[in-house]
Amino acid sequence: MRRLPPLNALKAFEAAGRHLSFTRAADELHVTPAAISHQVKALESDLGAKLFRRMNRSLQLTDAGQACLPGLRDGFDSIAVAVDRIRSKTDWNILTISAPAAFGARWLVPRIVDFRTAHPNIQVRIDPAIRLMDPVRDGIDVVIEFSQGDYPGRQVQHLFDQEVYPVCSPRLLSGERPLRSPADLREHTLIHFDSPAGDPGWPNWQSWLRANSVAEIDPNRGPHFTSPNFTMQAILAGHGVALMAELVVENELAAGTLVRPFELPYPASFSYSALTTSAGSSNEPVGLFCDWLAREAARYVREREARIHEERPTPPVTGVTGDSPGRLPPIQRSGEAA
Image (cartoon, rainbow, N blue to C red):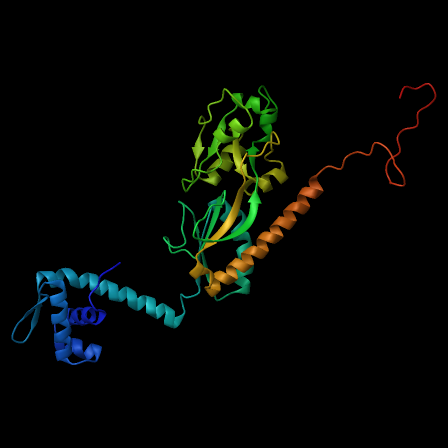
């Protein structure tokens, strides 16, 4: 807990030190010169140091006064800026969001125009998460996290789950060393997309290989990247296989520029979540954004499920039962084998 002298005493000293005059400080603060002198003496007593040399018709700062004045001046300037922001409400509606770079580029930024159109008075600032962010410590209104979801002491809004699985260029499925099973990874380069924020729970090859009983592979070999863009370029160029979240690669999978060499997801559950503080969640811009984010996330999940359903192959009809429609089996002629 901070132990500070009375605010009025600090204000009196700062004004007197800036003007080097009790009289002009009194005019600025709308008090008498005697009141300024009294406050300064009280502050000197509290600090145990003289702040002024009182001359016949002037004041001079002592070494202690010179050391103290710049910090107080900056502090009062910061207070004035904060108060002006609240009074004018010019910056009151600035919304600061931290998000993983891939989530921001591929999901949030393409959709944020709808939020800005609905709320033109809210200024949105999106920063890429370069470390594990915290709403309180970092002064951020909303933190988007990709992890296994343990956020003690924070308001958490679950957005949607994510599968993580190996992906590669389709060129790796053929050639001299075709990638057809997890064991074939011994002949291919492992590309590592490491957590930009240093999250120890981030997807990694060691966990995937162990879960799928793939031995005799060094899980740390191959290039390491902390940028999703760098990682994607390496995969698209056919340099190797990487573990990626579905959101990051869904467009490339749909276009056929990337493929899943085998249907083996990561052995842990991941999701995107929005983190705020209890105080932040009651802030109107934060509340409006979180409501919008929840609606967009729900719509994304519905569209994703519909797309998966459309892409799922329909099993062939092998016979007809009852009145169910279907293709009739071929008619067998006498003497033909069934």
